[in-house]
Image (cartoon, rainbow over all chains, first blue to last red; front, top):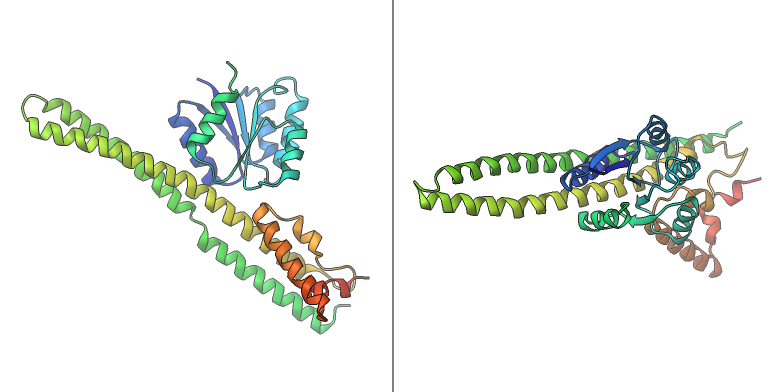
Length: 122
Length: 167
């Protein structure tokens, strides 16, 4: 069962994303910000896909992506950005940092799951 | 030293920040989202029981069996709708809370600023706090409106009240 690491500082979002992903058959690990996400990765967590918000305290999404890309373990792990942001410059920044896909809130469960499926290693 | 007028403005900004922060707590619908997910869980459990009942009365009570099956089907549709609603509402809630947080942060900065030391909060400082394109659109619309007012003899962007105070 593929594991997904979800990063979001909103407990309501974390709960809702976890529910949608678990209902679709994924294992879910969560973190409240980029720093906590990096700690989990450093602890040996090997997610198949990472789903991250952009605006988070301590370490935001872009900083997290940059850090994750430095590690051999997550250099090629697909990272989906799910955020309220829809601006071109922010997207470019996330893409340059190493994001694989971008979804703007509000998105539908189907759209999220279909993006995940496309990015999961075959 | 801060003048009585500046101190009074700082106080107004601090009060507004506290009021908007209070409003954020009231509009936060996290509890409602949690309730929707819990409702979905309970529905799933009840549906499981009804399905079991349908299996047990398959031969003894055809009418009850048929009604149970119909209820299970209806529950699947309802649960899907509930979960979509919960997911969407969670995202809308997140958007609203982040937008309100941005206003609170801006007001808190205005409340804390010593107007003689530095500009309080420039439009660019404010724009740096934004979390969505919607906020930027509103920002640009207001800046445009002020610019138009300025070109017709009013204060224009100056009316935002920070440039005059900067060194």
